[in-house]
Length: 115
Length: 112
Image (cartoon, rainbow over all chains, first blue to last red; front, side, top):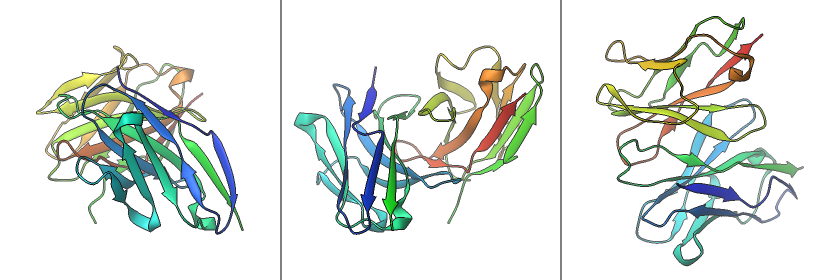
C-alpha cells in the first residue's frame, strides 16, 4: 500500500526566509505526486504536480518541488516566504493505473510565517 | 475558473441521524471522490466513483456510508446513522482522469 510521510509537523519561519518541506512516499511503481495547500478556513488547493519529465516542477505562488526518484522524495521549496503563505501543506501521491485513482495524503505540515 | 461546490458548509446533526452531504463536481470530470479530515488529523480517502459505480473504497467507508450520483450534476455522500466520531470536514473532489483532483470547500459535519 502507498504511504506518504512529511518530515515536519509544524514549521515556523520569518518572512523572507527560505522554505523546504520534506515529503517521502512509499510505493514501488510509477507515481504521480502533488502538493496541496489549505489556507485557514479554506479548501484544499493544488500548488503543483509531477507526472513525468523534468523532475523540477514549478507551481503557483513561487513554489517549486523536486522529484528525486532514488530517494522517493518530493520536497517543496520556496526561496522567500511571505506571511500569506501561512497554511497547511499536504503532499499526496496517486499511482496511475489505480482504477480508483484515489490520492494518499501525507499528514500535513503546518507553516507559520511570522511578519 | 471551474470549481467543485459543496453544500452545506456546516451541518450539525444529532447522533443516530442520517445526513446527506452534497457536491457538484466540475462538469467534464469523470472521477469523483469523498475524503474526510478529522480535526488535527490528515486527509483520509473514503471512496471514489466512476462510471456510476464505486471504483474503490477505504476501510472507513463501511455500511453506514453510501454515495450516489442522482442526476448528471450532483454527487452525494450519505451517512445513515451518524456517530460522534463521524465529526469531521468532508471534502468532495473530482478529476478528469489520471490527474490532479480539484477539491471543494468542504462540509464541516458536527455530530452532537
